[in-house]
Image (cartoon, rainbow, N blue to C red; front, side, top):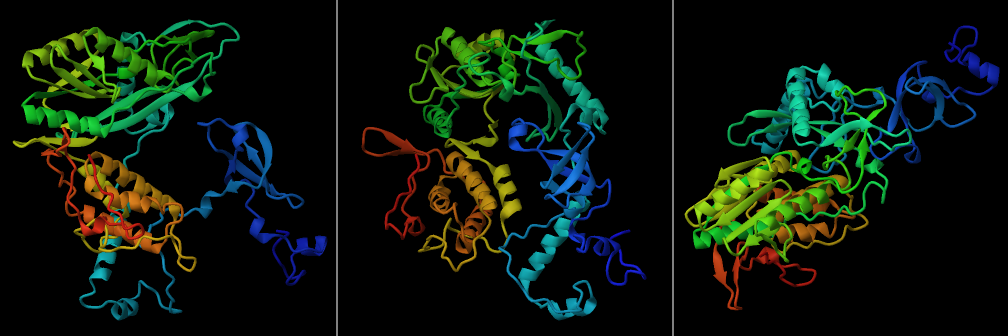
Length: 528
């Protein structure tokens, strides 16, 4: 009340009369107002929350910021780094075009009939696209959102708690069956790391069925180096090796099978002594802890332990590791080659009996799902045709286009003819770097996997990711417009004799005018 003028004080507030200074009305907040108070980086871990939920007590006139009460730690904390929920918009519609300032007519509502009648033009398809986009945005806002719980408490209090409970129970049974940890008495000074449940819904690309999945993940960032882990490196497979196996199988008429390891990491023994706190949802007596016997997800060495364990098992079966790609293994005696990416893999062989024998041998050591042929692998759809195989990342491409393309024009080339991609001039408006980097990174992954025809365009635009301008954004939109009409047009697995004692396949393309970099006058587009 001291900050509100009245009849006795006139235009001055009581606080101004008392302190001879105008009160900072823009800094005043309602007592007890909810706020998020920033936690300094040095006061929190890597995976800890970045803010406390607090309540405003008072504005600090002699210092910068406010005084907050934090119920979780029962303390009063002064801070100038805060965020009040009411200052955030509930929904933000992101314009896919770089924003441009347009004058507004005073006193005219955009929802009024006069404005609409005077604005609409017959044959203006750009406005029609804008209205269509706005309608879809409103429909998306009104549609029920699928919520994935972030904590065990959220999962048990949500609408799908029965399904999540089944998923947790299944994962606990898997961990018990695979002897992942043992519950034993811990020493008083024993270092224990904690963890949490991670939840996800997995949709089958073929049947559309939804599977509820859960994993217990340890907080490996809390492990002590040289005491609880040492080596952490584990190689990952390459796209080029993935394409090589189906190409070879198509050329020589070999058989192709695919497989998937169930709970892969939990098969590998730990190489050092690591303890974790009792799992959330697991009843354990006081003074007891869980000593890990297998590589739990999230631990620093989990990936390396699984890779070494799998390599040892394959070596026992007669496989040798490729010197080119450590995730490719071959058996010269049986004529078998396998490619493995973490827990997914494909294998090619001349004889069905050899594949069945490999399946039987692997099943003795691992829980494995085996398929004759290959339909999907690491998010790619694979189609077997008479001439060979085609790979497609249609879902990923569609998601990128839906989120980032302005929908203006379809294109027939990745870049405009004779384009000049230069640095952003000082007078030109720069665009936001984060969405530009996101699109470039996503398209780079697609180019390496299934779309080598966009490799040059992506690499060229990536050179200007540090300070992108409007003309760079326009070229991104051009590239997305090129992706839209043919997200499944994949180069066939054809073989070309290069005359150098080897054969080049998949991704050797003829010269195109848009490939030329005008800044260097060099044509440098070739993908193997």
